[in-house]
Image (tube, rainbow, N blue to C red):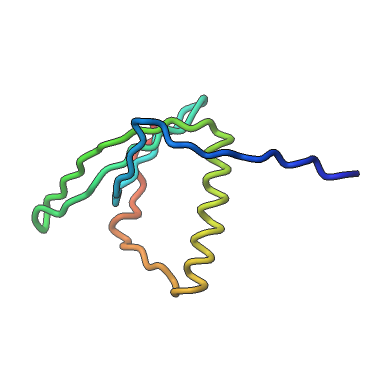
Length: 98
């Protein structure tokens, strides 16, 4: 069995392409797609957190799984180089699924 030939891939940015920093990602899931909402989280006080969402991205379930795999691979490589990434347990509380 031979391996299929990999196509050459050309990456281009559209005129409205932007890069932003996000320290908040919310995930909503339904039977057809995953919806990722990116934003910036700011701690206003000890009891008040403000999240300003700036971008929502829909992914097919297949693309979400591919993204999960590539993120796991890259996080493992990062931790292999720089050490374990510690998560704040307060931020790991499960949220609603839509």
